[in-house]
Image (cartoon, rainbow, N blue to C red):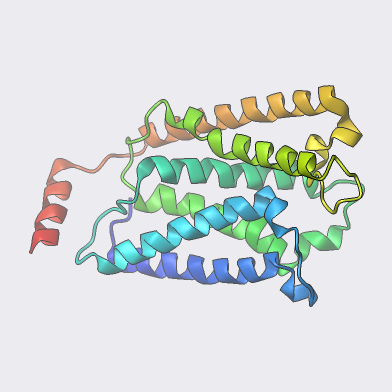
Length: 228
């Protein structure tokens, strides 16, 4: 694992810079318009979460005096990693090749940034710069809170507008579209995706357990350097 403060600063700064590019695009500005329903997309919300976490990582690393691991909350980082991987896999496996989607949309700055580059970089940050063997068996279950909360917000919004199908992006994704899938279809999709999400979480936990942990000597050296 990489303990270099300089490497972390470079990586985190580059990620945050790309994050700003993606955020601007998520508002629709590269198409010379404003997307007033930007907040209904899981893609945007999961990326906003990751960008915020990376910004706090950057601040923490900048204030650190020596090399060492990133010390931001392991639980929060794990929740964000699973959320952004959900974005990555659902888009690239289910949405990118949808018959009603213009393939050119997959190659916009925002799409490439939010669906591919930033998700992979965020996972790489966790793999490279965090101390491992810290993930608890409950973390994959906690991670479901974010997507389930998102799902609840989608349907609360739909309820508030009386389930009006004319409301823009009432259901942002086909698999949660009650008009297209029906209640049974939506439930089936949600169960499948939730099960896959939990399995993904435990795969990540297994990867965390297989990665080398910091030695006691390394930890003591880092602590002494911080106190100096």
